Length: 349
Length: 277
Image 1 (cartoon, rainbow over the protein chains, first blue to last red):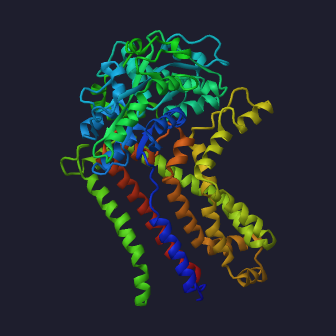
Image 2 (image 1 turned 180 degrees about the vertical axis):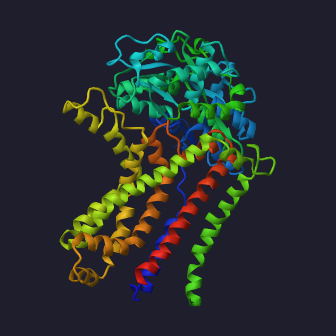
Image 3 (image 1 turned 180 degrees about the horizontal axis):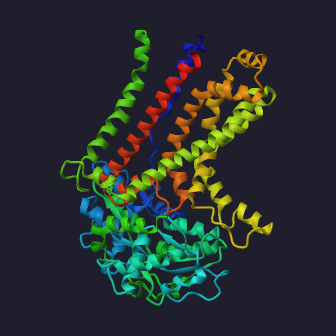
């Protein structure tokens, strides 16, 4: 057997180059460095476009932004508690409460987040473990080219006209869960009495064209014409419409639904002050106003920001939004696994 | 084996022990807990898995997907591999075509299938334009769609070992078969096919294990209404936060694959005797 001969000189060259590449010091900005998470899709787009430049100019720090679903983030943090991979994380209410239970977060640094004063008190965690940066509104999304009369209530999804055209989203996503809770409440149930919602889904099954694994996938299904009607978030629908997908969102008779998202500083982060400063910028008036505008429409939590354009059709301000159908995650979390399982069995073909 | 060779394998051995062996043992240990909070040692998770028809269905569907993918790949791959060996002038072109899919990421290849099979995708549009269908056929999010997409993605892993096996057949044996009066079909059936068995088994092993564990393609082409083991593991671990049960599902999948691999290996040893003996 003959192997190609590697000369000692070449080997040394290669080894030298490799060592240099690995040993090269990490370039750090003068203002410090923060690693943050955001949600994939419209959130990531909006954060890269508005939040990161604002953070850079306000604090001078570099941000490494990672897109990660809240449940995945909780898992990553739980796996490396003493040396968390992120300094600031974005959370939905459900995973946030799980994280609080696991002791994954620390209070924001006092004085580093002056913008907290502009938030309604219920938008800040009592112990300062997180601040609500946005609220997402959900309603009935439909293809306005193929559905001429806008649907008026969730019950309309049961119409035989929508056979094979309704999209569902898995109960393992926040949207799937809050929608089921909204259905249960509409039909006389609640977080602990979900049977009406499951019965509704069972009746809906002949109409179901696809079950999306996450809300982002719902957008793809609308785009490819695989589904024409489903529950969805205002910001996702607006972002699809901006891409010329003929989708619109309408208010169900039972009311708009609401999902709130938070930012939290991770326990054991090396830079709690910088992480808190990052949250402060996310709560600032200019950033929240930009995020609330086209094409993202993420409802602001800073009460100084008035609701403009599309948002104005839904509510006047953060206070009014608080009246929408909400989910008690303290009740849902302990039974989440059970509900996910029940949903999976129900929709499996 | 010389001492130097032994030492040279040490880094890989350490790597496997550290990053495969120990984590696997950990997963097995986690699977032996009775509750999501990791209390109580026992085999409740395994009992829960096998006593439930839903779970057994998920396992069977996953294995069935592996079998379907493998059969499609054997049927599609064998002629290509045979042509590759039989037509030397086309070799470069064929090899390029076989390897081309490997140069694109699985996610991209999977999305291509989503576009092809969708309600307003390539196939449905063509059929509608030809006036053959009124409403779109449901192609995407069906078990058949997953098997076809999976087969295309795994195809090179079947063709490459087959090329090696067919290429290794001594041309004199085939000539001898012809001289002794066997026709083309008989030679193919009695000489070429049996001599390809080792390559066929290697290909089967690679394709089958790849297909049963391909999370991305199964999820994107299969949609939320089909359940396969890899996504089930992910869902139980990450979304339901039930690590012990997720570990059980993972161990069940691993053991099932190991069992099938051992059977194939045993067949491989027998066929090796058949080929040379």
